[in-house]
Amino acid sequence: MKIFTILFVVICHLSAAAQESQGRIVKVLSFNILHGATTKGDFDLDAIAKVIINADPDFVALQEVDFKTKRAKRYDLVTELGWRTKMAPLFARAMKYDGGEYGEGVLSRYSFLKTRNVPLPFSPGNEPRAALEITTLLPSGDTIAFIGTHLDHLNKDTDRIKQANEINRVFSSNAYPTILAGDLNDEPGSAPISILEQMWKPSYNKENPQFTFPSDNPIKKIDYVMYYPKNRWRVLKTEVVVDPIASDHCAYLVTLELLR
Figure 1 (cartoon, rainbow, N blue to C red):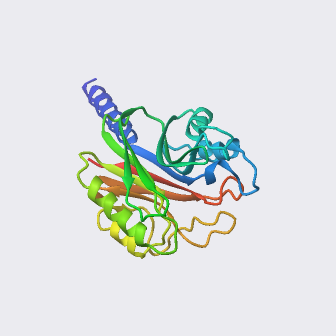
Figure 2 (spheres, rainbow, N blue to C red):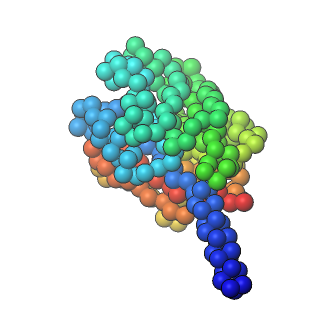
């Protein structure tokens, strides 16, 4: 009888440990949604939502997000996608645009403890950019931060370098393990990506980076998921979600485990 009692206690302990570990596993999706349009030129939020639902992420960083612009039929795109995916939505303005606003979006499986919109530096005449951060609680009880961003798109990398440096400066003081995701508009080995990787650990395989753009025939990687501190996270899986209709970008899905 005593042996069975010991075995029962051991099994319960292992089960509890497995559940706790599972509660520290997060799936992160970075997705540039082409301001709600599709590559066919129509407006189909259900097509975008389907990509997200099929990926089944815990957190989504959305780029090219419109808030009640004329071109987006006055929709609040993040709220619409949150409703369709049953996730908590949040929008952050980078700039006023087309009768509404344009910027970043985050969808989260979990509620927000705290949020902030961090403006990023940009040159006069160029598009403003932002980094949207949420702080939230995982099922394991761990507090983490998640950041979605979209760096400058111009060929000249002047603004992207400034923006990468600002991201490192602002978020290096974070009190909690942090994930950074977004369309960074530059390839591995470029100056902006190298600056970010001085602080952040990238999730991609440098020997075989998975291409994310364009969605009909991906030939380069410009969409990323990174994490900090480097010793607090482990990459379990990476996947490029190819849908040539929903957006001109592939969605980039990464499964991470938060380490003790």
